[in-house]
Length: 160
Image (cartoon, rainbow, N blue to C red; front, side, top):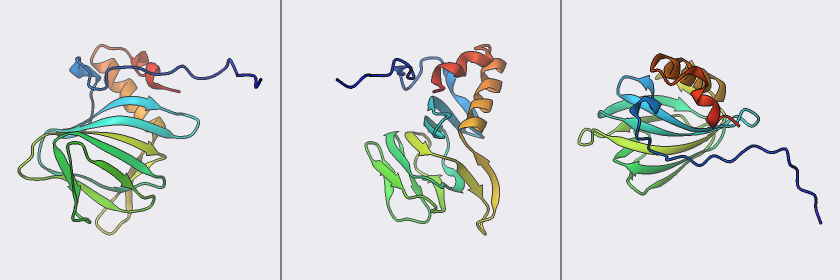
């Protein structure tokens, strides 16, 4: 028999779309994320991204793979011809620069993203102008949850 370690992270089982809107963390105008898991060892993070207006969300790239599943609405990348809509699975290869946008005829979308590593924001020439990773997302959550009365430690339930 193979011994099983008793020292392993606790599982997470929470409603993905929360009833309390304070759980959504503002990321940009008309853009919020709902943390589901932050892995501080591997740098992986899972969240729901909610956008409540059409237009460009961000231009960015990832050094690691990203997996997405559209729960509501639709979106696309300017660099590709496909549209991700409700029920669509999306794989983003590492290193690709893409511009996430919600179409003009859609003013709401929610997508589950599973991200390995950072998200590097770039300008139109591809130069880095910012980044997010597990640790910056945790910091954003702490500040937001404290400001809305949930307390800084509310994010701890998502950290592994």
